[in-house]
Length: 155
Image (tube, rainbow, N blue to C red; front, side, top):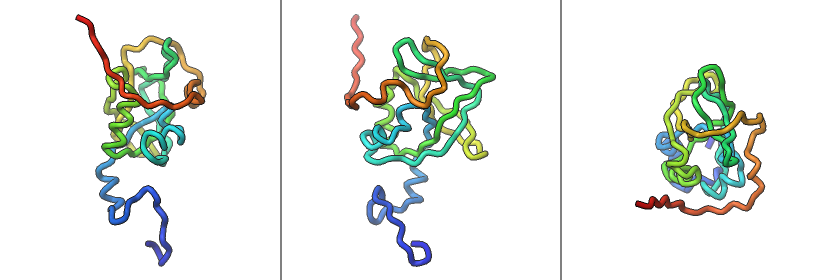
């Protein structure tokens, strides 16, 4: 409470300290579908507040499979947003990004003029072409289906 005015936080369960949640949260740099409220509600159970961020030394690419990814590139940068996710939400994001197809890497980026250590999903060995500056991928209007992926290898 602040000045006798209660602040509603429907996503916060009664008796849970919001600062304790923040300490357990992980920063994740997003540049695609994880920024869409529809996907956030389905994956995380609520929308997550995003703050603008820039990842320098990386470039945005469009894979031949139709999915966007980032790769290291010394003189380029990727604009996106920073999400603070709980461990359960980070696990849901890993499933969505189909790790190990995408790799989750730790990077240092800038958000609101501060250096922040964050996770980002990359495909260093991915093949593709330059990506248009549109904010999201073209498949965002498709019906959202969540499933667990299993990778099978034949011997």
